[in-house]
Image (cartoon, rainbow, N blue to C red; front, side, top):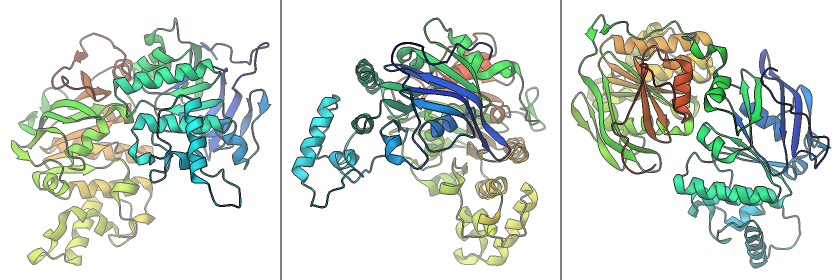
Length: 533
């Protein structure tokens, strides 16, 4: 492939920690990996980057034995990968430390380190177990009390415990999936110091991150995936950030995007210019997640918050919806203050919310379309706070028609709908109270192209009818419906883009790389001063 360096294993020296070539993985008609190669050498920190959907997660699943490739071969330390079902063999070979800890919070550090490894018939000697755990932690320089419960540790310590456990099983390749997502600057520094020390012992790391400055700070080599293909493997030193972003976006880096929904043309819509503010925040802050935020969404406007999942933009959306209580600042809807940290108060104030995960946060699977669509209405569908089934169904019929929900009727269980139609039900619930502002977090996750188009059209219509919308996403095609886009990086708004932005510029800002300083991007400093998240 053009632009790639040779990823064949070296002819001399120790064998690679992992060598993969020609990896193909299909899920039905979808090609998730198309002839991908990767070589990580002992003691190397190798970055794996790419936009959402590029194939990173699938490759990690293949490398850790969670998925079987349809073609290609993998070796670890020169030996073939463990066989299918050989869980112990995979644990001795490779481990993945995910963004969300895989430890058991209620168990102690010692119990987590040896979980699943005790095969004796006698009672466990707890003092001896803690002593072994202490010696293991000391061997890898991890400062943690073996008797402490995992839930008592900070994120940084939990990661170190997971790494120490993996190494103690024999793994010499550690996959780090967004390891800095919940760390502050000091914690990131300590993590990198620990990784450098372990690399000196020959441990190899595959580092997955949306924060490109961290790639340059830690890694020797970077591999870029785009559209399920390996498009670049190159040494990090000497690779410009512009070239790295260009590899991630490809020739489409200048295109307008696939969606037919466009921002307002000229100053506004048929309603005229964007109107009075419908949503305002002043100094809104949640420590450890995002810095003080000043934000305004006006009537008739769709504003995008662009950033990776770990950037803090999702938490901003959750805070606006009352799911999280901020540490400071205020929220106002149509000029009226909103009590923060309360979902009912946010609903009453006029904030409609589409959560990121419809399965976990958006739907009650055993209930009907009508019941799910009217969950936020409470006792508004009958006298004296009662809920009349006939009114519930009538409201649902109107929403089914308005959003083109493909269902047999309002009484159909929502679990029987397709993903796109389930998401439309979630949107219907968010719109049930005719909100002043719609906050939608990655609303097109896991839906087909036609459903994406329809859902983005609904977001646009909310604004065109005189309300406002805040669209939280890292999907570039989603963001093209916006009138302006704010790039969020490590909990701070770093740049603002007007409609017509270039893909490479926005991706660079989202990844923490300075983009084009031309007229389409403007530095955004309001509300970004304050404590480091």
